[in-house]
Image (cartoon, rainbow, N blue to C red; front, side, top):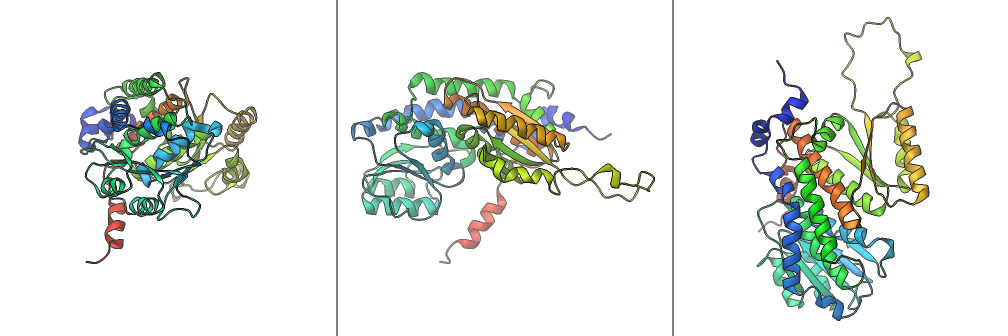
Length: 382
């Protein structure tokens, strides 16, 4: 007899066998990453940044799971930040970046070619520098040439599984500069939140009580549109879409309200959206040769508890529109008092769900062979 999806996720032996790279353990390390990164950032002298005065702008250079550290800083700072926080994903630097700006180069491996390109240009232009990377790596060495403050990243995890180790030093740097409020109690609140999520979502908690397993089951077989209801929740939505891509090897779109209401909502009426009218169907026809039903769109709303009132109305009406079209809707509510903790609550839950969705399909959540194949093909010929 074929095991049900719930049975697959509730079999700890199956989960362990399908996760030889230990992605579930890496996700569970999130709280420890925050605490360790806070210590490493303090030892590196990140607080000194505040003594040097506030920069004109903060430019975070990074790709993939490292680049999202810049989004975390921008999300935690919010629209109240006194200076812009810009995440640069690519080669070189925008022409406007110069000595009055702080460039933060983030690379878990320390070898990311785009980040090396950006950092080299920042050193050439005399920018203030903060580097978060592997010790002894090319990014570390290049940062030393530019007299960067350097925060090391402990190894042993995939880049995307090191989000908190990479982003916490940036948040603490933002605190030193007066861009965010992240005193020790705020950092600890985020760590505690991730511990609580890990306890609820642990592999030996069955799907009846494990919210991440339940979320994976609810989303199984759907094409997901993930929307956030604030800049912070939008960062969590982007993270979830990327985790679905890399961990579960599934496509997903993401957006932020109100912008998603100006474009993505139209997909509700597209080929993955509203079902054909039943009046056009012949009730008496032979359905034996019907193709398998196509995957359908599902809306995942990541809700912040600090939403603009009109965004709250937009989110509620978006849910109504989706349900009128018989589209599944899942809503996750952020928890915590600080923006850092609320982000942790959403990212922690959806990180687990992306891994459980991979394991539900028999997909090893760790390898990223398509990325590695692409890198091999673009590598310069020696």
